[in-house]
Image (cartoon, rainbow, N blue to C red; front, top):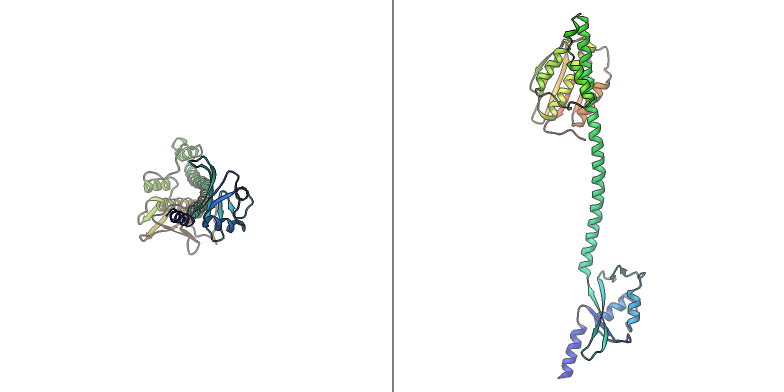
Length: 315
């Protein structure tokens, strides 16, 4: 009966999924199951006989099968070894070694490492994108300021020239546009359109001696701001270069796009129109919104701007 029990215990011991073995106080192998025999031979090509050779293998940091504290077999399984000193009831001391299958844990750890690498790369890209975004926002602010200064100074110069040509008293000279330019350069006013965009546009036109005839409705948000910038640029150029008295703005479009066609009653251009600083800046702003700008010189000056609706200016 005892022999039967002993054999049953040995059979169960040999069939454990984990590798397990025991060494006496002299390091001599006293008990080892099939899994530990198989595992040690697979990793080293040798039979397990003593504790010293097992420790030598476990402490060999150059072993090809080793990755940190995990040992890898050719079949892609991963194993971790643990040594522990145990004492029997009769005070005999043994060294117990257990090899546990940590394949799933190892696989999850490697996946996590790859995810961490991907996250680190993503974070690096986000930092670069954020830095570029800050630079582009600053560039956009500078561009808007240049357009605003160009527009306000142009109107102020034309207004002052008309004032002087009419020999009016100096106290009647409207200095508000000049003050606005100075305040803008000193960052005392925001880069935004007037609360009433159309009223502000008409007032600016009146100050330089031109009338805006507007057909259609200006869209809101970014698209409206872009079209207002185009109208401002055209009215200043129409007075300065063509001597126009009227500026015609025809706005059409659909639910996706707003289109403005701008002409005037001034002198017809002599040839192709080269884009100056104002029109170049305007074209850049329009294209950043995903829109287009087209300029014609014959049979009359015509500027056509198409801007998508419900969009934000691209950085």
